[in-house]
Length: 71
Image 1 (cartoon, rainbow, N blue to C red):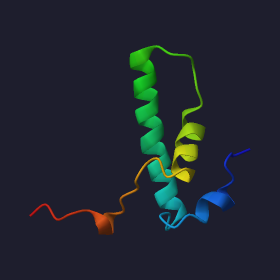
Image 2: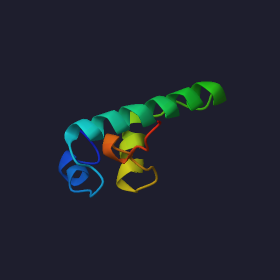
Image 3: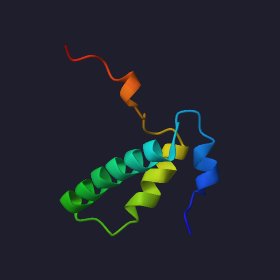
Image 4: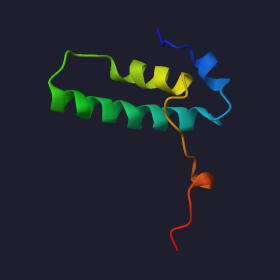
């Protein structure tokens, strides 16, 4: 079972769609996994940790409309 629940995650202001949530969680989980492999620490559930960080606003999610122009 997903923790935190998907309903709670979708109520957040900075999450505009499930796609945004999945992409943000996957990117953060990959960062956590890479750091884990570098530190050789104990195994953890990276997706759960990423979702908890999203709920706690520990990471900023930048949507495509918020990205600055690179021109």
